[in-house]
Image 1 (cartoon, rainbow, N blue to C red):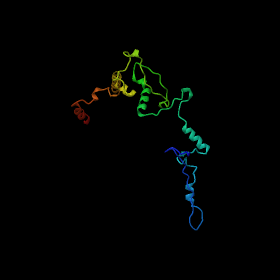
Image 2 (image 1 turned 180 degrees about the vertical axis):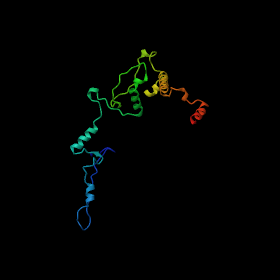
Image 3 (image 1 turned 90 degrees about the vertical axis):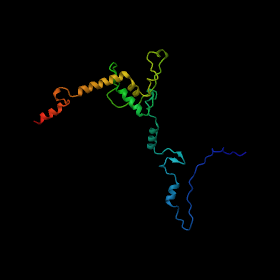
Image 4 (image 1 turned 45 degrees about the vertical axis):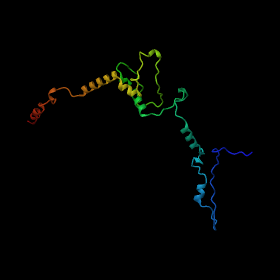
Length: 194
């Protein structure tokens, strides 16, 4: 009984054939052909398979590259997530949360303005007892934190009031006679020419 490999599951390495010389002069194989047929240690793929480098420095560098970026055992190996533009906006809003609501006061996260490297985002699931008291309706639920804050009416009125206060404080007040109003501007222009 002969053993044969199942269809599509046989594999054999493709070994390069050594060049042969044909003809009168036996000066040896051409160096460029011989170089191409031998395995080059600089390449990492041999016949489609990965061969680790022999140099210990390169091996250590490769091992450091393959180690996943986590917080460590103390924080249950929490991975560093990829930061998308939506996540970046949410993190910036969280850093500015002390400005959002005048009634709530938060401790500052720190003096560094850099975004955190390790964090997790989750969804708060309300218990059944909070169905009528503090549950968000489907209309109020948004995909990101920024969208929720922009659609909140109380926060919108607070933002508009603060913007109006800042604009009023920065507009030039003081002496009313220097403000341009209606036809009086032409009269003042004539007075200035005199």
